[in-house]
Image (cartoon, rainbow, N blue to C red; front, side, top):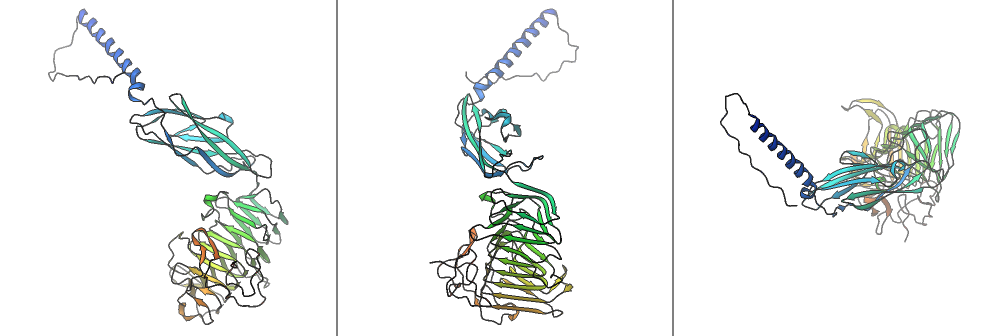
Amino acid sequence: MPNPPNPRFTFSRKVSRMPLSLDGGAKQCLARVTLVLGFLILLLAGCRNDSYFSGKNSLQYSTDTVWFDTVFTRKPGSSYPISVTKIVSIKNPEKLPVMASFGLAGGSSSPYRVSVDGKTGIDIQNVEIGAEDSVFIFVQCKLEANNQNYPLLVVDSLLAKVNGNQRKITLAAYGWDAHYFHDTIFNANTRFNDAAKPYVIVGYMGVKSGVSLTVNAGVQIFASAQSSLYVAGTLDIQGSASQRVSIRGNKPIWETQFMPNQWRGIHFLVGSVNNRIQYADISNAVIGIRIDSLPVNGSLGLHLLNTRIQYCGQACLLGVTANIEAENCLFADAGTYSFLGILGGKYHFNHCTFADYSGFSPRSSGHFALSNNLRDDFGKILNHAALNCSLYNSIVYGYNKEELQFNQTNLSAFVQRMENNVLKTENPDGLLVFPNIQNKNPNFIDTKRGNYALDTLSSAYKKAGVFGNPVSTDILGRPRKIQADIGCYERTP
């Protein structure tokens, strides 16, 4: 049907002040005119679909599959968790609008939900997509438990219909059952020993004083937003070279593995003693590990072995008057500090790598920082305590000219021994008195992807010394050469 004419109406500017009166013939004539106008209006409305809407189905879709990777199945008795939101864009390339509808093939039993143009449901009708315009479809999924120890694939389809023609978009996710702990405090010794099914922290998890939490090799722990693991007793993580323990944010998908601040981190409280973490990967926290106060009996607060702590919003490792020993460890890509030892403490590092190239936040000072005091925002000293730090065969590197930061007062001892390291430094305050390799690039393989293994021509290659007992393996459990490399990774030919 051709486009309807555009009638023009002319109105007289002369207004009669006489009372309006119509005789019988005039009234009949007016009624006929009104009836004809009403018919024309209905006719035009009936023609609108053909005249103003495209009859084609040439919509352009941004994808034919919405893939959620792995999603935890629903915690019993709650709506947690819901997946991240995926977005599909649909463009209408025509010069006329089209009318579309969207539905889920699985109907009301589908674990997926969609929202289009402000409408949410399983069957969304009459969505107008303007000429040369786009709409966005938002997709989420909430999966039911499958009672298996491994992820199961859950598939449905989003059906898009235009003028009787249908297009199918596949919706797919792996559903993974989990052990959930919601605001839980362990009052008795507990062991996580299920390497097939992950453990998920919702809210907080606490280990009471005098109680131990043991984590077996291969276990995966995920923490939801704002969650923390508080340890007043003892934490023993027993990963191995072939089965590392993983603790990270609760979005188990590749895209989020580099994102910080997904959970708050592990916090060792005053009185916590004899903690040991080996062959673990801790990531995506605000502060990866925080340790408060020296143990009153002189016991070691935390022993870290072959562990990686990465992608933390503020700090990878924070010690507040703490006692920490670390060997073959990586502390990398934090917003401010790879390591911060504040208000004194005892720290010993051997064959560790401290690196920051993340750019999570502007950083003008060094990311490896030591202080024997605590100051307020105006620089006034609030407290002070003795500091003793030794750093051997380690790498401290980043994009700043100075990656060491010292803050000392003569009110307490400030003892640091840094020897045989690769350092990015201009020697702050002239405190470095032992031989080190300064400002010679260690040539990491890929700083953008957090791979701090050594590339060829590294300044750390075959430059390690022996301080105490020799370190025979690297962070991955691989044997070191007779003349070992500096840092946590041993370069292989």
